[in-house]
Image (cartoon, rainbow, N blue to C red; front, side, top):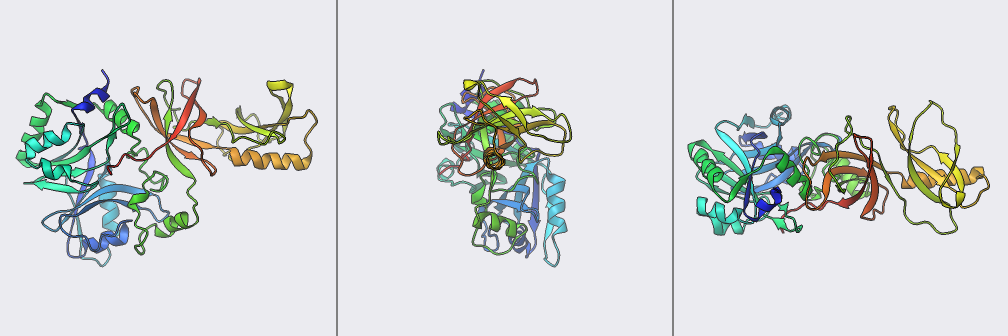
Length: 413
């Protein structure tokens, strides 16, 4: 039975594999301010945010839920299986600051609780329902040693946002609360496949699929974690340049298809997409798949089905050096005569302008009611017009017609 049915009440998702570290010391907020994309130097106890840690090239080290606890320490809840990476990265950036990084996993567990009945359920258990209802994204509340934080909302079958909370449960009291949640008749504990399908359906980037050192936060739709008015931080020069000159070319999108499909063994999937409409008196470019046969490339004549017209197959701009299935652009002329050298150059430019580069990052193991089968990071020329018709060549070799849809992160208003 579809896991989305359980969103009417509540779904419990195990996130205990996520990294958890604490920072202490009088300079630890200054350290975070110097390293991260958010302004942390003036944070007060009880405040929290979603924050990004970047490499010098502006790529993601981790995306963390940052919580300034009542005792003055800061808890960072990072991505799945990123404990050593997050701890070591922070530790190696401590120079003159009086700050310490410590493992915060002992005697704790992390869970997501989502669903239309999740808020009322938490209110009954923690007696804080009125305060939970007023929580904005990334705000938190403490109940004894148990932490509740509003996080990315999920999406139900009707594409409506469903409130979601991150729970950090600690100690014996936390174990008792977890037992109550698991035994509650209105709570469904999701399997790993169900949790992945829910995340992909909501368009939420995950670790390590999307949150890794291949992508920057702007490409994943995480613009809101970048404070544009703060000063220097690791990766700031790259991020500022991308924002100033509007150079963000890749986008995280949802892939909607008729059926689930598996990615190719390497994780790379070739996709073809039709170009924008051309003027009727101009050549009409198209895209096609070809496999490289030799090291040299020579233009080849090719017939097209409509009107027995002929054109040339030209070398694309995005052919890489790996011997894989190539994505190539074919330009068909409206006339039978051969292209002149100038026309050939113009056609090449046209193909380059309409060539696309895709990579599937997450593939849903289960069918979704919205037809969203995967997430992909897409390189497209501007302007982008959604939905985009595309074809995915899956691991079984059969091309699958799909649509690419924008991903606006489901964050509560």
